Length: 307
Image 1 (spheres, rainbow, N blue to C red):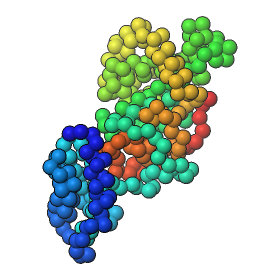
Image 2: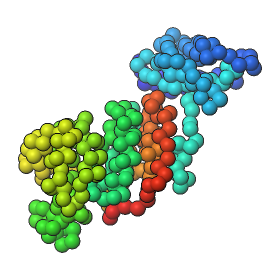
Image 3: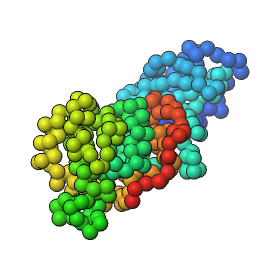
């Protein structure tokens, strides 16, 4: 199935809306699905066929359905009377951030990538991690979502309280924070399925003053292979830090938290639903999970940062 078919379908549907002459009365969900499938198949002119994926449901005053066309899936809508087909829907509350910005300038890819830059013990970064965890749990492997870390050079003069390698790699809250950044990178690299739970438990149980003594117990409770982390730390410490420094330069990272989506910085509101909407805006075709509303982050501080 060639990629240009879906855009062609969308154009044909839009052009054909004015020709839809179905009854003004409400139709059944079954009939709604039949109308859309019939219309799309005619638009394809034999190049491919469409099929329904799952049930046709009512949502916000229209029928909603998932279509599969060749190897691609898309969500379409039709009015309850069967008169107007909508090739896609835009949830206004999800695409306009609290500060009035939209997600329309986020580049699109088949699979969205999101890089959240934090310091492992920046309180604002920890809040952003908690928000992002809900998005990860929702989208799972539909998007590539990773944590990365803010590494400075010669911070506070480059002394050993904050830095390693003669001041080349430093962290704002000291070398224990820097060490934890490395451990988390190791877990993300080699034990990714346990990564987000590990971060969550570290945030709840340790701090920048005791994490060197605290992390191992937390790791074991999260099912982490501790020896694997220790080996990675010993053998890959500098290469992992250097990689983070290069990423920081690439994206002009200056503090925690900062979110990069499809190689572009997201500057909209900070929150679970805002993060989800921004990441979902980066898909060429949004997965069905993007229609789930993750709610507000009432009671949390969603501004500020560590710089």
